Length: 452
Image 1: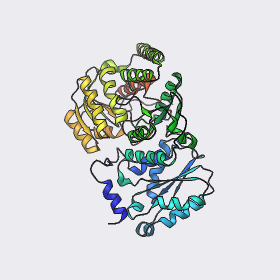
Image 2 (image 1 turned 90 degrees about the vertical axis):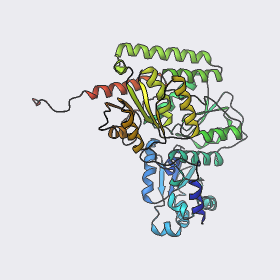
Image 3 (image 1 turned 30 degrees about the horizontal axis):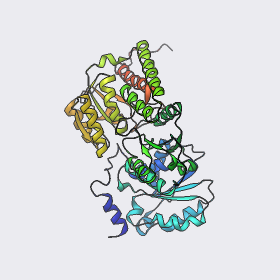
Image 4 (image 1 turned 90 degrees about the horizontal axis):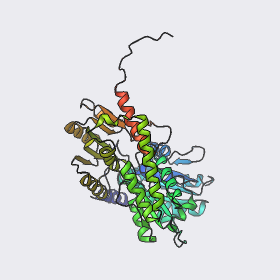
């Protein structure tokens, strides 16, 4: 058994990685690219066949990179390199890229080169003296798991190779982790909302891992006093490492992210208590709830038509878990089917606590795929589904009246970033439900001829 075979076998061991069940989740290669492309002033080199580069393009769009500022390269491995190894081609590509105006080059490997035993770490170490930028190898073959596993792999490489210890602690500061591990198609607005909340509380953000993050900011990440994980799907390993190596306390752990009225109030209260800004937190909660109530009185959302309507939630854990309380309390529906893309222990425990607190006993599916989702929808027959374009098709013929597309899977349906976090996020979710309700009643046929 060669080194590539051992790597592949280790990745398949139970409990080491989640299965990649496309189209809900892409592979680890995609997740690593998502994370690396969040580092500003860097470039990404995919050591892969050209087909895998399409996953890099997807990650490029997910991070909303500017094609005038961000460089992506690919070794474009062919049959000869896949069979006999592509280390020479990788070294030559790195050498040809030495003129790029970047501070770091992330080298990520796909399945083929790792299976045949290409050692990108050794190649990067050999080539480092020849180039003016940092070389960051990330062994992220698709067989290592889902995109969430790839995010964890890339974050570990960043913490290992870029973060510098020994820096003076910044009192009352925070490091934000994995905001991009989020199926909200406009997750960048969620990140901006978090930063605005922290700024109002006077809490400095030392680093964001990762979104448009300069290399110098990453190097100072160890100077943060606390860490704040913005995903329930990935990034926990990075938070644990920051805690164990640098003594950085993780805050707001074990509570759903701030989607919906109750979750937002609980999350803001937790932040205020930790940073001794309880008064500011109370003001944000009171002001936000007043704004939501006043808007609903004026706009008359259609929520009143959904009282006790059976509903389903099919999403990532980051969005899906907090949606449970939003759907139950704010929309007053009854979640009868919940399918999450993730399946690791912390996701199960967090969702279990939420369901026990709400007194709900829905049908649950963890690590769902399209077949499991359709089967679950067929058994439960919900009236409303909170999910993606996939569920609109998967629910055909099952009596699903409304599919509220909140998470992006097959198409990009938002051009303007709009948050789900916080109180404006509540209104954005109400609006999505209302628009689906209205579109349900649109005319299916053209009934008249225009006069012009």
